[in-house]
Image (tube, rainbow, N blue to C red):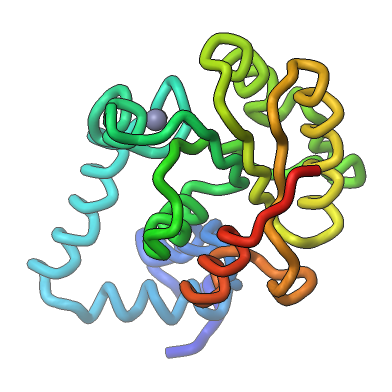
Length: 203
Ligand SMILES: [Zn+2]
């Protein structure tokens, strides 16, 4: 059952394992375990999984304003007139979910899809930064909250954004400390996240 895929494994199973191994956090061993699990599952469950994958690819796209994942264009948050004219900048779509869950924030978002990391070849032009700057110029938000992760890359991104945005005359803030250093927002509990957001300070 835990045999690595290779000789002795039917081609379709090997292919499935290889595809699963492309997912984050899934090594070859886990991938073959999952592949065999799918193999043993009912036809109905297996097809439901396959269809769910196709469905997200068919129906979910990127909002052209905030670059969050959305079913409607522009996304629900960008098209909500009750949202305040502030922009909370985050690294990943999952960060939007985490912040929304705190009910501490009533503005809009901007998803960068990563953080600046020269070592990994992630330069500012690889992120949605020029789009953010354009957006700030057009919308003149009351505040831009840079809620990137509290680690080296997140901080470097925050400093870079502050340098780019400050000349435009917009208030740029960073959430208060109180979050564990090096933390990925996705894994911070709602209360801590909410408190950090509420206690944010202008750069
Ligand atoms: Zn949007």
